[in-house]
Image 1 (cartoon, rainbow, N blue to C red):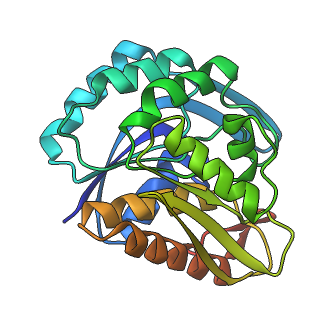
Image 2 (cartoon, one colour):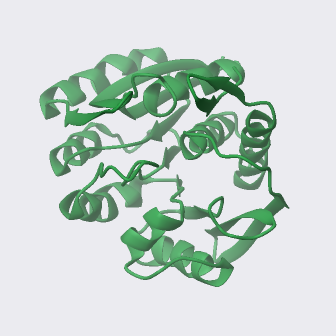
Length: 252
């Protein structure tokens, strides 16, 4: 089975973060191993988060090596020290790395400050096969408003040509339009992925998309195929979402 290593932060309800990564991996019949770089308290009126000690992050990265990792997905990193620890634990021969650079939660809580964002751009993105920011994250990372397809393309270009990622997919789920469009820049080309918008929102769609793409790359799918299959998984989940404690959540 394909082995995915997800590195990031917990969510106590597993609506996002490492817990959701494990659920996506199970859905796609992949094995899941994890490096917990941060812990969060969300939902029920609670909000808090804390990074794991850098030495413990690196120890976990050493511990998962024997699992035979085929792909790496990186989510929310809560401090510059966390970014530094993750980068230090990576190797030149690592499998494809997909980074979903979580900067703020859907409820507006901040995960990454300016120094952490700079560390992501400067040291982590150059190691990544793909980065997958949403509109708000792309705006913070690039320093200009990202609010339509043209600026999405400009942001994806910036994350590759300025920051050194091999490819960038700016996700447009929050665009006010009739279709759902993501914009990829890779290999000097800009490609749009579009489909009819599905009504309703759900937490963790960015996490799930990045995780599914990482698993696809670990299975030697082309980048375009991995993105298409990842989008299909998210669309399926949105169409069949269930209700749980007042929230629209993942159906599996």
